[in-house]
Length: 390
Image 1 (cartoon, one colour):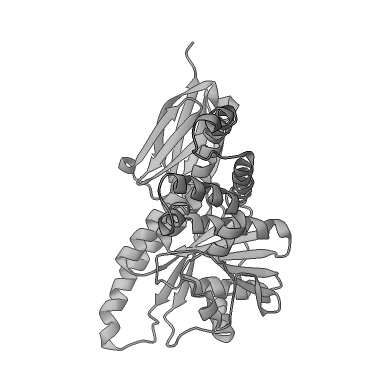
Image 2: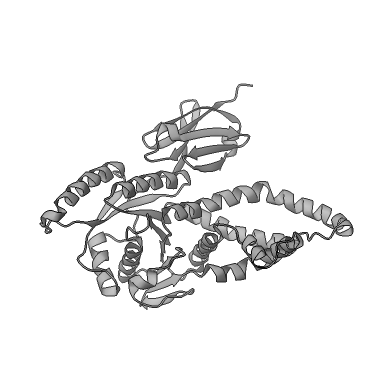
């Protein structure tokens, strides 16, 4: 099974790239599903076919899907939602206000993520291509399993034990609704699916992210940051895709300065993403919509490559011995020293890069050691552990 995450800043052509990648994979014999997690779906427009909430055949061997987050909310969050609605109603929030409070920010992305896990475990497809939302939403989506995992491991068991103890007492003295076991079971069931997809997405043998960008200063800068943040959360990136390059055949003087700027930005891209496969797409002279035109995009993008192969091999996370020390190495490409912070708290190490933080639970072999230093070296953060001084 292969999962390909196609992401990039809004408007760079990632939906076209996702659709062309999926089409190319299907025509090379892989049973392929391309699905959109972007709330503003445009996958159906790219194929010029109608797509719905369930996988719909585009051509033999290729299906497309546009997730209906509201439907997923009804089917998987109903028990928890009903309890929260009752709670907020008791607190005085009724009607539309209560409905808004029971759906938390990012929940639509979370249900889309759960759908990835369902397709991976079904065995119905060999390849899953995910047309992700624009970069900021994608990073939030991919950081959710880590944040949710911390909550479920640290706080959820405590909340459940407290609820069991206080529920009989409080029911006698107050009318506030308290969560029953069915609410906790619904939460655990949903978390189990999210935890499963976290393991899938964090496996470089299964999942690769591909960054789509145009040769514009702000777009390239965002792609660089995204590359770093994906490394922080342990997601492997295997390709940088440069879209809408002005062809050499365009000789109109109007485009001369644009071509010069693109050449400068392309040099930056080649340097920043040197350890990835660099794929190029020219600026076409027409809209590349429909299966026939997407086939041309896929052919130009991948050439003789199998789009489902790992185009670059790197390890997002590793642990190794160095003399008398043990090093925990986390891949943080393009990170700068001033934006990285490392803190140990009990059995966890917290790594912060820019606005994002990740909690790493230490294995037993490292819990008995103490952190003696951390540094950035060749695109990796090395956290060094030494023998604890008794």
